[in-house]
Amino acid sequence: MMREIKKLATKFRIAIESAKNERRFITNQCFRNFPNGCCGITAELLARFLMDNGIKGKLTYIGGTYREYSLELPSHAWLKIENNIVVDITGDQFKYYPVPFNFNEAVYVGLYNDFYNLFEIDEEEICNNYYLLDDVYVRNHLSRRKLYEIILEYI
Image 1 (cartoon, rainbow, N blue to C red):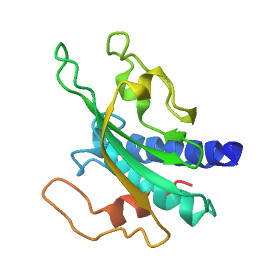
Image 2 (cartoon, one colour; image 1 turned 90 degrees about the horizontal axis):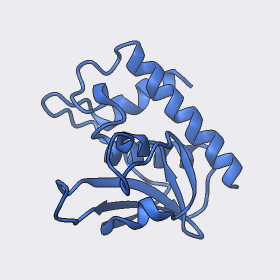
Image 3 (tube, rainbow, N blue to C red; image 1 turned 90 degrees about the vertical axis):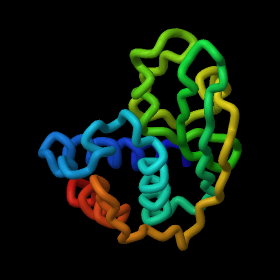
Image 4 (spheres, rainbow, N blue to C red; image 1 turned 60 degrees about the horizontal axis):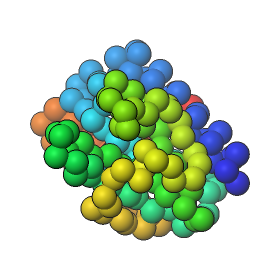
């Protein structure tokens, strides 16, 4: 199952990058800087994509914050699937951070490691097969539904 999840996650990441390179996210304040600063919404969209593609295991959205005083309290979000498998396609936004925060995996599917263990979990929400994509457009942000539709065009 991990191999299939990695394949799907990689496909989704490549689709986002392709759409970004073709300037499809230029009106979206978050995604035009992908992967920086959009881990939360990316994890939500990836969860929907995995479920739409037959991943039936228990998917959980995880949001955490690093609370070391010497840094600016960076936060991060990813998915967790059964057996504590991390699924993350935005971890490389930390590639320029100092050690121990340096992480340069564009697509990570694997066990919790030192990087993910740095974060104190603030949010844990189970994703289910009825994970809705809203149509809400907020200033400088496309709706989740529109983002998902754009990404799917590149898959």
